[in-house]
Length: 235
Image (tube, rainbow, N blue to C red; front, side):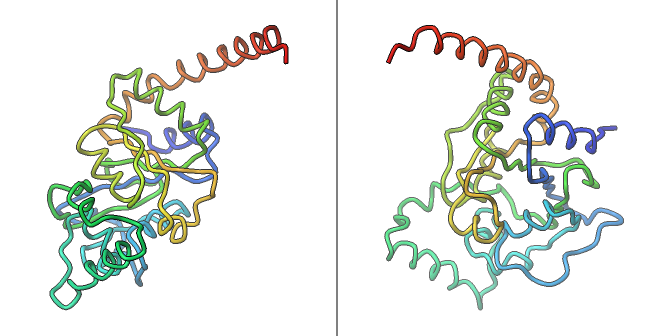
């Protein structure tokens, strides 16, 4: 049985994380002993914030209706009375020059609508996660990317908006990272000097096996490059 508490401690210590890694799982039935989300949130990524703060819960599709873009990336159809909200949000983004409408079809989406989505701090996940969301600074997430490369996992090009598309992107093709769009940063409170990396749950152990090697190699290379700078820099 996987010790997710130990994995969270390891990731937090090695990557010097200030925000807890979040486990996300898509299920056909609600996990036993896990509460359904109470209340409402303005965005799908708001659930990431709640989980990073220590809450474990599950959502149903209707919990995502307040977020037309997040519903789109998670393949959740809005009810007829709210369908106009997606076009309205996209229309605003197009009108102000934030996106071009022709970009929308290229946004990654989940292949099917999830019946239940489980969110929890990684250490408290009640089920094996489909995706692990890590927020951190570039120098730390670089180590995660290098470990993924060493583990022969595809590292996708850096993503922009919407941030939530990093989840289906990772599940369909490798480790995905997002710089964090403005909406996500407001709804989650992520620090300005941080961004996200999403790891497919199926790839987690392979990446972790390479992480210590990468950390040690970077420490050795830091000394090597510091020596070269001291020796060769003349101006």
